[in-house]
Length: 227
Image: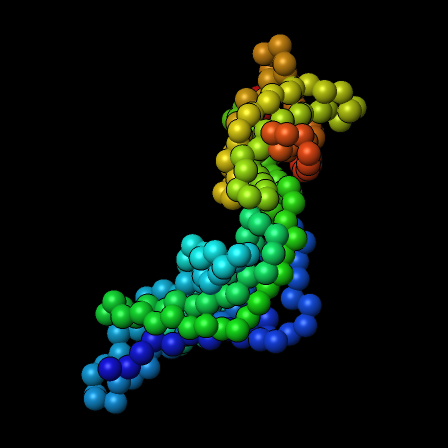
């Protein structure tokens, strides 16, 4: 019986200084469902997962890879090229493994020899943004993601300012979940409950660990054109 196979193409195995501070490292690779040699047709790759061990030999949860449609030819099957934006929640060295499944339910695990080093502190991952933007229905959705050491929840405060820099709205959200993209709703009202006027605004997000040891910020600019 043939075995599904997966390999890493980036970063190169044995590359020096594969380190990151509060930013994901993109892992790219290929996968193929090998024929058995008995004439039985291959079923195809169902999924590729990235896992391995972290600091202290702790087993990582498997993360599903994303089929890289932009990188592969239209004639190539799904997961012939794939990627994962990998970022853990703890500082240390991570030894990466792959698990690949075919559509018949067979799986194989591969030790890739890839080691990644991370320094993790409280930080926002990617952009914080408003949608829709411009806001036309009186509700602004503020989207963001926070990464923390040791999977801690965080306290997040939303501040909204007008173009003059005056604070028009403030709200605190205690114990916000991390490691997933979150959304806050601002109903385009000031702190006294009145609707704000049409125009450009600036929001600022402040994330803070419960013990106050670390603080991180993100800003964005929603346009209110109907309220």
